[in-house]
Image 1 (cartoon, helix red, strand yellow):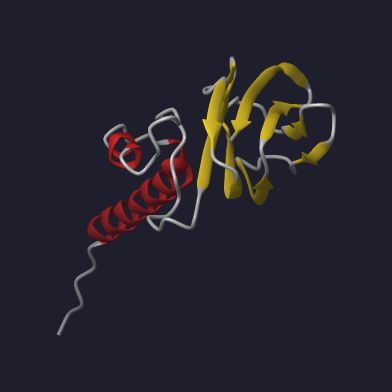
Image 2 (tube, one colour):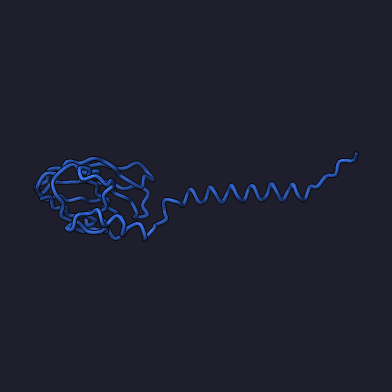
Length: 153
């Protein structure tokens, strides 16, 4: 029996496989850049009435509190917020387009709570923070005009 070679079909199969791998890799790389506007209103319902919609809790339980802040090229999306005292899981997203960013959380009067410079290409800073009554300033160290005031009751 004579074996029939079909190099054209093999080449098409390999080419299609390479294209599929490249598409999947590209989708994975760009997945964290996608924004799903429909998700924001669902998270807003769990936020207390005096907290802006851009701050969303990370869990559904009453005891766990979370804050999500985003820094854009124009500064923080949320310029000021009021929250209750307690422990918070804080997530600050770097959407500035800069490779690096440095964060500082200071209590009014100058006491620094956190001062951190993130490694290159890190898009988030996540940390649990205990906040007592008072005013706090969250800022990007290299851009002092990029700030958010957090008033804690």
